[in-house]
Length: 369
Image 1: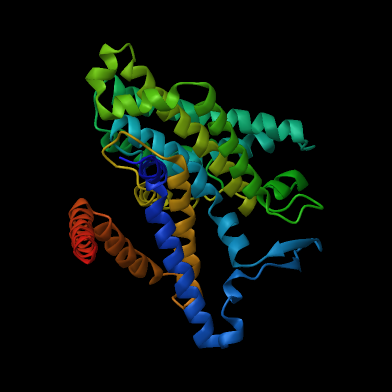
Image 2: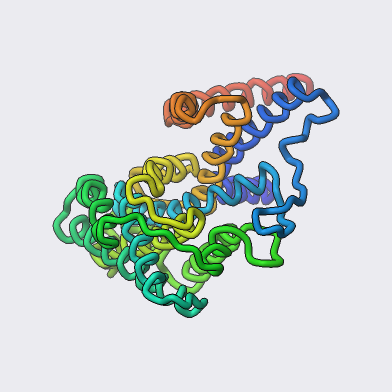
């Protein structure tokens, strides 16, 4: 094998995870371009990509546009998809309780914030530490059921899925508390003088944290080893129980960040509605990102691409005039088509066709020579 071909194969293996979400993103962007040409005419073909300044409700000049909205509104899903990727890779299952745990985390955060009439940045950080601890304890509970008691992850996390929002409701005495301080408003919106939405910076912070974790620890290797072959990993000195529990604790940390963003964005906690259906979108983001739902090798970047792809789909459907309620039907249809196209059967068929065409092309070149 030539050196150049070897390099190409390595590059292809490295970026294989993001091929599917990247292709879907390009498809959705193409649909928006065609829609703008039809509605607004050829000179406005790239209207979807326009980013401009506008005045927000406080009178500050901030960036606006479809791309900014996608990056901003997908923040909670992007953060949760990071944790969901690790749980899927290690336990070969999914955590369907992330939405309910996010409600618990947000309730704890708002409860602590409201304890002090003078809300400072230090107090908000203390509130985040408290809600992160609560969410991570929920993750510890789920992880123990999965790793120690060998309960299937979806069944184990069904407990939180069923009871979590009721627990969140009880934390604040059966009320839906609101927050009106300036700091939480900036966390959910814009920092004064900064035109980029704050949630985007929080996603970048989470991305940096996990980049450093994977760079300076063996967490990626341990998680993938357990997902691929748990017995073999154990024989090589890796503790599957500890790693599985750790991934569920990590998803709790991610859920806490998403819950805080949403509470600050809405300036209140709606226990029943907060991040409703986020668990299904997170699982889908992991799948779109090229990660096997049966565990093993994973790509955080692929899952992030998947999260932003889902939000791009939401924005695209709204721009096409689909109402919020029927949007779920169109979204489900798109997801079915996407999953079929990315299935092993279709992939195998495309590979066979490609190899056949390549072989014919090679034989034609030989005959000409």
